[in-house]
Structures are given as structure tokens and as C-alpha cells.
Image (cartoon, rainbow, N blue to C red; front, side, top):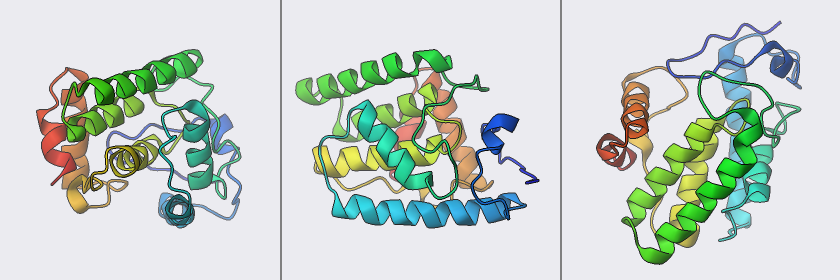
Length: 195
């Protein structure tokens, strides 16, 4: 059985979700992180070959998550069906995601915010909705970068240039910036994404 220790701000996976682990030889968080990163690297190669501006929709969100985690989790690409320590109620996910995508399209069309702020707000709301049982931060960071590159024609965020999956100062700054954004203060997040 895998022993999972969660970094600060991470959402625990429940027992049913852990049963979805495809690689039964994994016994530690470090092994899981390594295998997940290998799968994410494959997804990044897929993204490079399939550049698209059609990303603000449920099918793309699910497909990207599936590409990121399909070698690790049976439920990759499927919305969560359990309550978590953050996020909307699981049955509200499709409606909340549709509203977010519509909001982003409106922000772009009306130039409501700068391009960076649109992407940062998009990222924050995706994390807040919490679409999947696991991988939400990594998924939301990648989708925000795709929004910048494929729709807004801007360079991707640097995200503090550190590994945000592991505990450390950059992860603490990242979590703190998301908590501030929960209160409507995006200044820390705006500073973090390009640091």
C-alpha cells in the first residue's frame, strides 16, 4: 500500500481514489511524484504537437488532465466525485467550469484585465473549483500557460521557477498567493507568476 505524505496545501486523495493507482509497485510519495512527472513530460510533448486555441471548454480540460496522468491513475481526465478540503461541491464542477470559461472569454473580448491578470485569475479559479481528485495545481498551471501562449500570444508564467509539488519557500509563497486571491487580492499571485 502506498504511503502518501502531502506537502502543505495539497488535497488528500481518498481511499477509493488511491484504488485507482495503476502502478501498484509505487510505495512512496517520492516514487509517485517521479512517475507523475514522467507522465506530465509526455503530456508536454503532446501539447507541443497539438497547439490549439480551443482550450476553454470541458472536453479540453478533461483531455489535458488525462494526458498528464493517464499512465498513473484510472480516473485521469474524469472530474472528481468526492468532496475535498477545498473546491466546489463535486456535482457543481461542470457548471462552475463553464461559467469560468465564459468569464475568461468575456475578459479577453472586453480587455477587462491585463493578459497576465486574466491568466492568473483563470488559474486561481481553476484551482478553486478543483476539477479532479489530484493534480489540480499542475493542471491549472499548464492550462494557464496554454491560455497565455495559444490565445493571448504571451510567454508562459515562470511560477517561481521552483518545483511547486514539493514543500519549500516557493510552494509556501504560491499557496499564500492563492489564499490572498481567495479574498479577492491578486497582488501576491500576480507577483509570483512572473517571479
